[in-house]
Amino acid sequence: MPKSSNPLRRIGVYKTLDQVPDHSRLYNYAATYESRDVWAEYVDQELSGAAETVQYETELVETSWKDHMRQRGRHPALARPDDVELWFAELTDRMQTKRAYNPYWVRLEDFYTYLLWHTEHPHSYHPPRMAAGKDGATSRVWEFKIGERSI
Image (cartoon, helix red, strand yellow):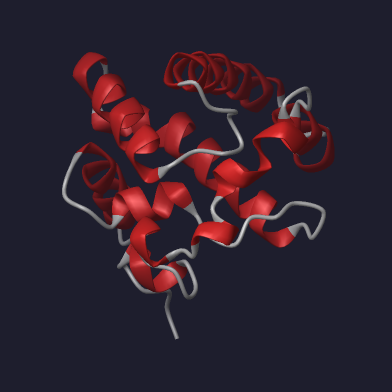
C-alpha cells in the first residue's frame, strides 16, 4: 500500500499541537536540550558518509534553521508547528518551492523523524508534518514533495 499523501496520516496519534497533552509538549525539555547540539548528533549518526553535496546542503539548512529558532527563542530540536510554518514562509518568499523542498524540507523532516525514532529523545509528535497539515507555505512545500514522488 502506498504512503498517504496527507501529512497528518504520517504522524501518529497527535495531528495538531492542541491534541498533545501539556506534559508531552517539547517545551518541557528546554533545560535538557539547552547546551546539546542535537543537530550535530543527527548528522553524525545519519549522514556521516553522505556525499559532499549533501553535507554542504545540510550545513545550509542547519545554519538557517538554528538561526530561525534562535530568533524564536527555542532550541532547534524543540520546534512548534508555527515555527516551521514561519520558516517555510520566509524561505518560499526568497526561493522557489522546489528549493525549499530540497534540501530544507528534506533535511528538517528527516531530523524530526530521527528524533521520533530514537528513544533517547522525548519526541512524540512531528512539528514539520503538523505544519504541513495546515494551509500555508509548509503545506505547499509538502504538496511539491507529493508531486515529485508521483512523477
